[in-house]
Length: 302
Ligand code: ADP
Ligand code: MG
Image 1 (cartoon, protein in one colour):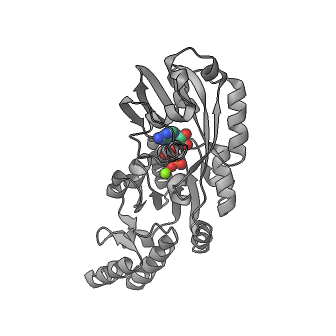
Image 2 (tube, rainbow, N blue to C red):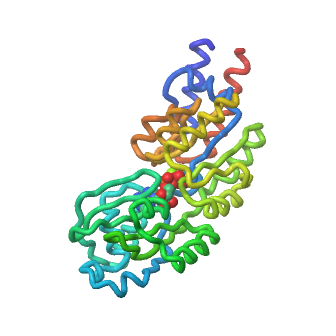
Image 3 (cartoon, helix red, strand yellow):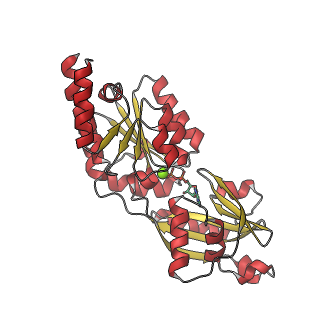
């Protein structure tokens, strides 16, 4: 491509709310055939709210010093350093309920799985069923049943454990972005395959996909950060040209692996650093504009 065409392309990009890093990016956009979206924070608003807090029997009957705290207090303590949307929602719910947050230390984040911290020397875990099981926490069937009912309703759920004992379950709703369905439809119209990748459960993912017109066959759920990058690699080795759109630390390896990595402006720093295009208005519809722009710029020159 000529340097003039690249300059014109990236200049218009800025007007469209796209920050495009580097002259060769738009050319790669023009060759895309597959668009892989992260769910939480990308297709959804990224501002989930807590809808349910369900303590397990353990919390009520426990004689541990932690039994003085509510489920939400313990979760908020572990999430107090978290920049994850679910952590923010837990903190907001605790603040709204005017709960005091117990002092915590030894904060740890496992991307795509959850967070941990210590309260009164006890390890608090907030995260997925898989991750808690890896820590030796038994998930009692009645709580698992409640989690699956909530997931069927499209809610995201996380478990809370303290000192290896399951303390309860917290559920969230997150609205889909107002332009997401229109963007999915427009991308399909342009001949692209639209996929959704998420660390969340399959059932929660299906509810969002159905609202957006993404085929169930094009959903990959409960995918870890390295699995997200591997999915992109697999598609590429089948000959596809892949864009990944994400917002989280968990998306960074996939954003870097993709032919074009696209990050939400509200996303985490590492996602923004790993991507070549930033959606400055957090409008997924602007991706459609970038594809039209790149095709108009490069298909002429070729
Ligand atoms: P997505 O891929 O949809 O953006 P993530 O990979 O960020 O989702 O998270 C996947 C799952 O990991 C969440 O649904 C949640 O169960 C768990 N998780 C991740 N981070 C946290 C956190 N800070 N607190 C609690 N759970 C978390
Ligand atoms: Mg995300």
